Amino acid sequence: MQFADRLNNVETSAIRELFKLLGKPGIISFAGGFPDSAMFDVAGIREATEKALSEEPGGALQYGATEGYDPLRQQLAAFMASKGAQDVKPEGLIVTTGSQQALDLIGKTLINPGDKVIVEGPTFLATIQCFRLYGAQVIAAPIDAHGVKADELEQLVAEHKPKFIYLIPTFGNPSGATLSLARRKQVLEMAVRTQTVVIEDDPYGDLYFGEAPPPSLLALSTQVPGSRDWLVHCGSLSKVLSPGLRLGWMIAPQDLLARATMCKQFSDAHTSTFAQATAAQYLKAGRMPATLAHVREVYAERARVMGESLKRELGEAIEFTQPGGGLFFWARLTGANGKLKDAGELAKRAIDKGVAFVPGAPFFASNPDHATLRLSFATADVAKIEEGVRRLGRAI
Image (cartoon, rainbow, N blue to C red; front, side, top):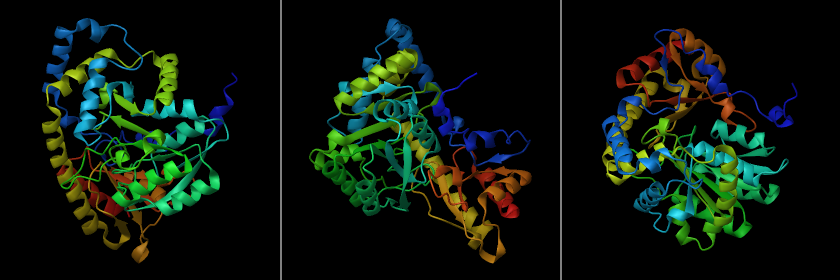
């Protein structure tokens, strides 16, 4: 069987391959990027489902518009307004089957084989794979604890003239980093000055601990004239409501939305109207603020415990920045006192000790740092986090 040449540019996700090793009884997993299913608002989703079926069963169960179910688009516009993006109109967004589909649509509509795109180094692994699938040359821009280094990003833009830049500005995956307010404005100004599209992926921005992060690039765009013409914002309900609903959205200039809608029509006709109607009723009922408050509180405690446990059990053998939100710790093995410095080797030893994490190297589009690793605190309770980190300490 002759397969498409584009498949030569990608390989199976290293994370998905790791999951095959997690069947061992008693494994404590810090590997997945999943929300904790114990915190799903099952009662609220059940109530929303029943209302969707009782109030507008035709809309929930019939084919729908490719752009999305209109009541949900209205609710999402209001949701974005509550987060500072006041001028988003329902017709200015399309509903996608998770934010992952939005990234795929961006690849379909913008990338020609050989085009260059810039991502953070490290960044979301599936993004690297998606863009490469469409033939892009993926270039990594360096980051620190305050997000992408805007000055160096601008140098890369001048050098490579990329088709677009992809960023996760708030609680990045895997880095956990949050782009500072000053750098956010610098990125928007650069987008206008160089006429470069910026993709803002924001699945974690609502999961902050304590102080809220800076406004999204979308919310800030009103302060930088012309920047909205070069900005695409991707959102998701997966991390804050339920990944099983598979609901995301994309806000973009109308000409891009039109082409993305056309490509989506070829792909799936529309995102599940049943899921959309359920989410619309859930948002309409006003349950999201309480849900977010609960999730933030639980994840903040787990993040605190993981940070304290890493310092206690691994000491100088590991370095990291305590995350202010999101689902992940991004850490680096130092090799201090003769300890292991290769995260790939540590991952193998850790599985034998009964704990799993994801080595950091696959998250780099180029020049991978083999000493890095990603740890998720989302799905393990406090006791499991403490025990899992103890096992990690024994493995190193």
